Length: 281
Image (cartoon, rainbow, N blue to C red; front, side, top):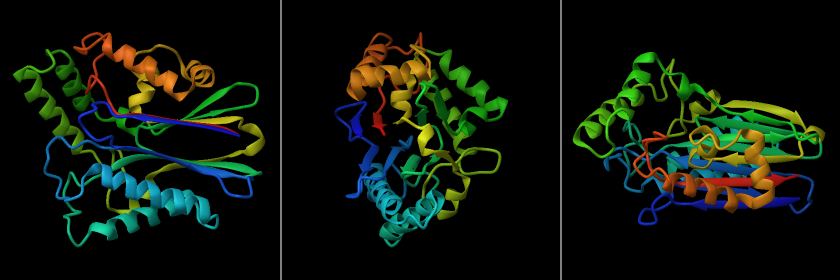
């Protein structure tokens, strides 16, 4: 088994809001991985005194521990318990009902000699590679399927010069529209303070014999495929296998730096926090 983990902040002056960890039991018969992408709030006021990095670290650590030690629980149940623990750790000091309370996307996977379980919530992705090289994308695409009026607002932002006053006003309108669909029926879901959101996660199980490797990527890393179109998902996994997680992130940073004004490849941030976990089983 080989594990390769790399995480980089989008801006070295700001803390990395991603989280990544892998647990391998002493028996050597299985393991678990967890990757979270903290949601950067558009304003400083989140109702929380701790911040997004604190939240992702607490939630990710709890989810990894539960996924590895509580095989009697499903991954959804592990996430629900991890959310409850994290909320309990700051409920007395923070307003967890705030619309911008710290939250994150979630990818989790757990494997043993028989099966590989997976959980995905929001727009980080998991790739599962079969022994014959076929790559399956395990993803939650609800954020990309919001109503057409949200798409229209996004396109209006992309049509304006990034950083201009008009761009900032249009971007604020778009953010407010997206927030209206966050953790709401007909919208998309992220892990925040409510344990019940775990029921909204996409889950499944694959036969262990059918999985050669797993790769979890936050959207700052998956933009190599999803934004820059440098290759498809099998190409992405091939880069990971040949150049490692750090090699893929070097390619992402090069693509970002080649389009600093975000005109050729519109995106919310020039550089984003980016995290990759590759587990060759």
